[in-house]
Each structure stands twice: as C-alpha cells, then as structure tokens.
Image 1 (spheres, rainbow, N blue to C red):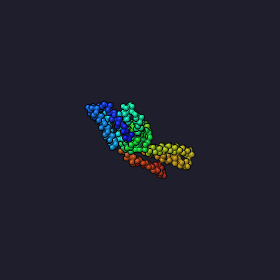
Image 2 (cartoon, rainbow, N blue to C red):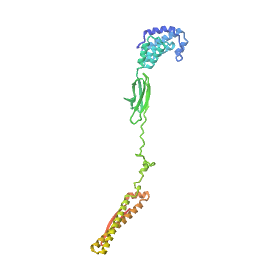
Image 3 (cartoon, rainbow, N blue to C red):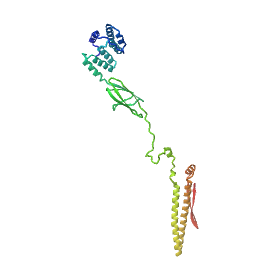
Amino acid sequence: MRSLPIFLSTLLSLSFVAIAPVAQAQSGEAEEAAEMSPEQARAAAREAYGEGQALFREGKHEESEAAFMRAYAIIPNPVVLLGVAEARQAQGNLQGAVEALETYLATREDAPDAEAVQAKIDEMKTAPATLVISSTPAGAAIVIDGEDTGEVTPAEIEVESGTHVVALTLEGREPAEQRVEAGFATRPEVALELAEIVAPEPTLEGDGEGLPEAGVDELDDVDEDDDGPGTAVWALSAVAAAGLVGGTVLGFLALTEESEFDDTPTESGADKGERYALFADVAFGLAAVAGISAIVIFLTADDDDDDEEEESEDGATAVFYPVASPTGAGLVGEVTF
C-alpha cells in the first residue's frame, strides 16, 4: 500500500483508549511511558504516530520508521506495525517489512485485512537476493551452481533465495568456491582469494631404477669413456688380431712351399715361398705394432682426471708406413699420445 489508510488513524485513536502502556526495556520511550498516566501515554503515542505519517508523506522513510517505532514502544498497538512495514519497504528493507507484517498477523488474530497482508508477505518473499562477488586478484570468471554467468569479478548477480555455490576460476590461479545462504532481498558478500598455481619440480623420465641417489648434476659428470676401453684401443686390437691370423696363415703357406721346393726345386716355387714369407713378416710386424700401441693407450687411459682431459683434447693417433727393399719388406708404425 502506497499510503496509510485513513481508517487506520481512527482505529488507532480508538484503540489507545483501551490499551494500557507496556514498558519496553530496549526503548527509552517505553521507559518514559511506564511513568506516564494512561492519558499522557495515549497522547504521546498519537503524536509519534502522526509524526510518522507526515514524515512518510515527505519521503523521509527512515525518520518515519523511527517515529512509528516510538509510537509502538509507548503503546504496542499492532496497527502501528503496518506503518513500520511501509517505511521499511520504502527503504528497500523487505526482510524488515516482512518481519513487521508477520508480527502484525501474530498479535492481531482477528485482523480484517489478514488475507491481503499475507499476500503481500508472500510477494515480498519472492524478491531475489543479490550476490556481491569479489576476488583477489580481480577478473575471475564466475560460475554459480555449475552454470557460467559470463561475468567476472567484481560483480553483483541476482539469484533466487536459497543455497548457492559460487565458484571462481582465473588462468594461472587455483580455483576456489564458496557455499552461501541467500535470503530473499538480501545482499550476501562472497570474497575469495585465488592462490597462484606453483609449477611442479622437474623430474627424470622413467622409474629411475639403478640411479636411486643420482641427481641431474651428478648425471652430467658421468664420463662416457668409463664404460671400457676407447675406440682406438679396440681398433688397434682388431688390427693386431688380424695381423696375427694373417701372418700365421701366410707363414704356414710359406713352409708348405719350402717343403715342396725341397722335394721338387723350381724357380717359381722358390719365388712363391719367398713372397709368402715376406707377407707373413709384414703381417706379424703389423700385429706387433698395433698390439703394442693398444696396450700403451689402454694403460695411459687410467691416469688422473687432468691427464684424461688433456688426452681427450689431443687424442692418440697411430700411423703405419710400409717399407720394402730388395732383400725384404716390413711395416713401420708411429704412435702419438
């Protein structure tokens, strides 16, 4: 109702005659009324009520509510609560207005307007709540009851009265949520802090078996040459082995030719035996030089770390030179460390 009915003023005046003043501990006016005579209390209540009506018409709703409350404190007439409800509703305090109207119905059981008052109460209770949502830092996406609102913090969003779950998400931040009870026409605040996401520590791939205590820095210090002899040692050893096998075969052929020459001396047999013997000598010489070089490189590879670094930079090389003369042939090797 936009204005107080005229008949309420008449009814209020009549009711003051039969109602004795009731002291209210919380109100100064009630304490004063306890010391007044019935006639003084009725006069003070009528004056406060009339002041409330005048202030309401002037749009001074907060002052109007205070005047109505003074009148009710002096003489608790339920009809005054209708004025309190009007003043509170005008201020946007729907919950306070509903409280006043429900008290009116509870204290005036024979109210002629009970049906209309109850309908007004039901209508007020359908008013939505307003969630006042903020976050630190701002700019977080707002999801209410699992639905994206399309809004970002800070924001004010209307919702139906009841329980709601507000969730906030922001890139680079941990999500956060809060359950909130929102009564009709209320403005509950939701303020959440979004923690920064911490990147996980880097880990090695695989299960790490065999390296239970080795860290990344320790793995970097592992020398690949620690697994066994170097390439040069293996190559020279292979050359030495090949020379021994080849020399043995050629020596056996040379002895065979010599035996045949003793049985059947021929010039071609003598030449063939000499070639086999020459080639056998070359093969044995090559095997000897390669074998000695491999041994030397293998032994020098066990020096201290400084020597190993120098050797790894300079390297070990082996050079072979074939030598031939009218009376023989051979292989000269040069190894550099």
